[in-house]
Amino acid sequence: MEGRKPTGVLVVMVNNTEPSKEDEFNKWYNETHIPDIVGTGIYYTATRYENTDPKPGEAKYLAIYETDHEDPIGAFTEMQKHTGDMEIWPHLEAVFVQAFKYVGPEKRTPGAAKAAAAATS
Image 1 (spheres, rainbow, N blue to C red):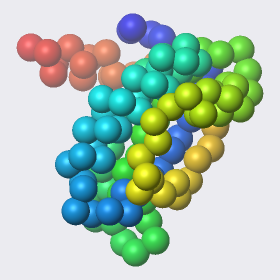
Image 2: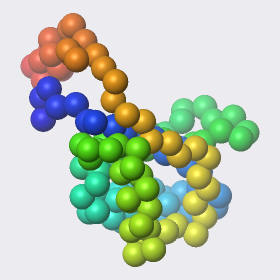
Image 3: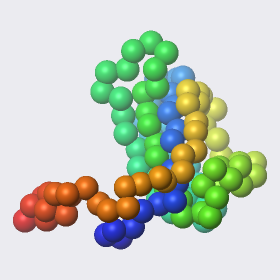
């Protein structure tokens, strides 16, 4: 939604420790894991990225989950209560998991709407 700002985000950086199953991992993450997380109602969207040049010890994948939970830091704790009901990839390695609270700016960055409009024309 235009102008919507989450109250917080959950930043997750992970690896799949079984490289021969990379396609299956990405399918699981996109088609099972994200719907499970968003299905809790705590996070309303997720966006994934792949590190284009991971070094040893760095994460290959980044996921950002947005929430409008009143307490964004507590949202992660609340979501963890649901993980027992979720299918977890057996070769999942969490490198970094941290919740962040939105602090600003109150207005959108100048030019963002113009850039978005140009991209759709």
